[in-house]
Image (cartoon, rainbow, N blue to C red; front, top):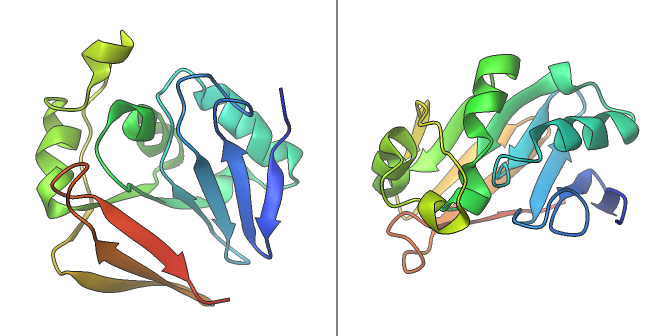
Length: 158
């Protein structure tokens, strides 16, 4: 198994099949200098491994502030409820994927054979393009429907 790694500047890969758990998507963390922002949360089985990976990189999981969901399939949203309940992170998703996140219907959890705990989305992306500020970074979110109705792409100019 590979270790978590710095991808570029303040962006880290903390999860993927070879880093956290075989059914996880790629999970990224951005260090904003005071807060930590996650991009996706994995399928759920790796939650404690993700926390260990954050700590091993030298960060305090208590600094977790938000998780941005790129789309509402189980390999991207399975651990959202854990991050929300334990670390009080804000969940951010495009409005068209909110029903799946909040009900569990359409997540594909049954295909992976894993349970999914529905959870509340705190911030809903409603436009084709939006910017979220996590000082000093401005994350650009672009609605790219297709994989799911509310799929988004995220980038930041660093």
